Image (cartoon, rainbow, N blue to C red; front, side, top):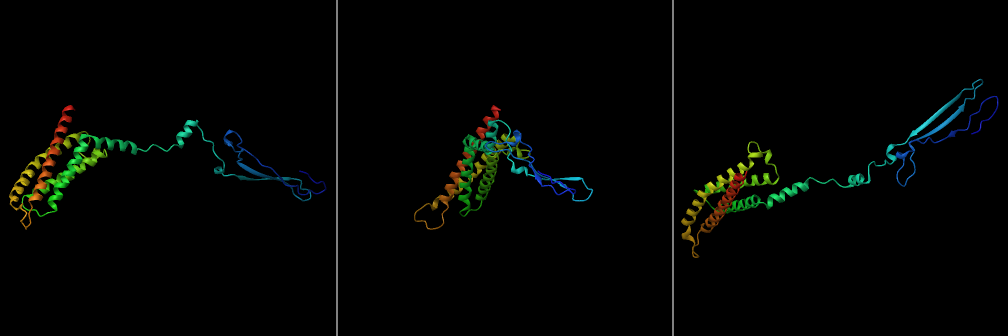
Length: 244
């Protein structure tokens, strides 16, 4: 940078330089050069006025965006790999609990109760019914819905959300439900057997009118299977209560 001599000062040549900061360990990344944080322009000017010998210093700086400078990840190599690995989802534990329940005796017996109950009320509802068959349909639909609710609450491990009946009382709730179902299915079976016997006369090949014998017989079989499934559930629940 050179300065001209004379009675009056002339403008100096503009001198520029780069002010580089942050060149330490934090400013370096693997395979790249140092990254400056700030670039400055320095201008020194002599004002061309008689008797004015004061120099003015002007510095103009441009701050670089921090996002343009790569940040070196702190921690060990194992920590870095752990951060790069996707987080283990909680669904894996939920999936294990679901599979464990489905493979248990209670899970299997609940599935059978749902299937047999649906078979019973669908068989009755799909055909003409009257009189005491309404009671059988009521029992079938009621305990099918209750069993469905117990099954999904236990499957998803949400029994603690049930007020008054959940938590520590859940096993007692299941046992009471199974006892009530088994007790009410016994008269339902009696009704279906009575209706089946009353319609046995139309079980002939030459009979051309509407005959509900096969319908009632099928419903009787489903009712017996439902009652048996609930009795097995009662035995299982009683044994679990006795074992504590």
